[in-house]
Image: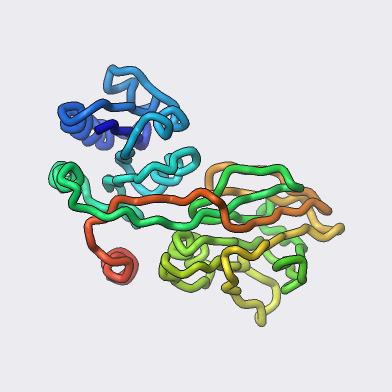
Length: 270
């Protein structure tokens, strides 16, 4: 098997786990390690784009941030090993890494596919989002004025700190913290969740994920920040429009059987 390996950088615990994982998968195929983890391993490094081209399965070591970093350019199935406090999207904790890899080699797993969002800023395509797209104030304690459209129909005119457009995957992240709903990842929907809206009547929306959701700053608004998956940031000026719809690419995860509802109970409720 051809493996990809991506790990959280500058973390000694992650490096130790990644070395153990590398030793195991190297005995069971060819390994393409991402540049940041390849250096402490003393091996040749590859970009995530190269890993996506060469690998059949990609192993991540870290937390949800590591997964989102990988998903920017990787659409191969991801087997995610958790070394963080939460790791909501990960499949196994580090102590079960080897047993999980053995199950994977036996073919005793399923591949779960999840939706991603295509992001256009004035028709220029930006990186896809696996979690969410956020339009937010660029100045602390200053609200922004913006309009939200669904298929070119205005659904709200807001004064707020911003708005989050999330996939079902991202619904359990930032969107949840601002009052958005938990969404089963099998539901083909996107969540539109305002951040600290000025009006008490403002509530989150759930819309079909293949709708075209657009956010446009009002002319009198301040410059805002457009952030994709908490990672890539762009300036958004009054009069500019960001539009989000279903991407043709998918996020794919190796799963062994634990359900989404079990994960919610274990990691969000207890």
